Length: 389
Image 1 (cartoon, one colour):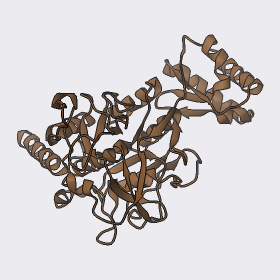
Image 2 (cartoon, helix red, strand yellow):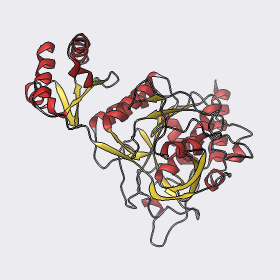
Image 3 (cartoon, helix red, strand yellow):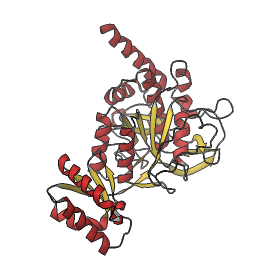
């Protein structure tokens, strides 16, 4: 393969077409060809500033390029590349935000997290939160946040300009004590990965780069409170890579109130989360179905917000952060647990959800997350393994 020609064809198309912000994902099938293209790209980008628009994911051997530059490449190198549109992806919260106050939120209590804290608070567990960033000034989060990464503005802290990421962070690991709020795993360490802009929108390529970063930095769990309707081969590939690296990927199912749901939650390598309401029924807005592994509290959830505040929000986003927190409590005492083992334990220890009129339990998938039951089952399993060694 002529790698010099490959990049020059791309440059040609970029130069004659306007940059409208759209991108394509080019994934090499052969690792040797990816390596050759990568080496040539590094050599050329110093002299060709346009090539600095290109981003790279070594984990899945992909380049993210302006859409204008992918036309001829798709035809000329079709047998060597997988090419897909870099689609937009949205956070999973509902716009019914209300102001809140510092408290022990109902969801944290509903999954019996406080009863689990005598056994585990999530210490030493690293959680990657791919979202809108986090409020580093919030007093309830100051001991919970690591530096993370800002994929939209490299070199800057992943500061939250939306609020969603801060809300997720609070449910995960707020540690405000009696004066603030407490999250599910208050001693876990959060690594905000800012992939979403102020409007709560990102591209698949941003998510791929975020997961790539989490794998490189040996994160234990990734919280992904977002989704889209369309399959993405690149996104699935990077989720598989994280799964094989031993990282649990916990994803929200979406808020359409339908059977079925969004990606990446529908990929089998993720732990798919739906939402329950305060009556422990599947929330009316929550997607549902046999692919749902577990449900978490998602209606009227109070958590941290921007400017050191608190806000009440609803969505499968909120449910996912409860489940991720519960997983962190378990991984703190069972650090070698695989994503598959974690999923099975979450499903096995979940409590039955209350049914609405006409609902069948089998059509809903898993039950409601219970951190205390999860922790007890995980510890018992560890003892059983030790006894057999």
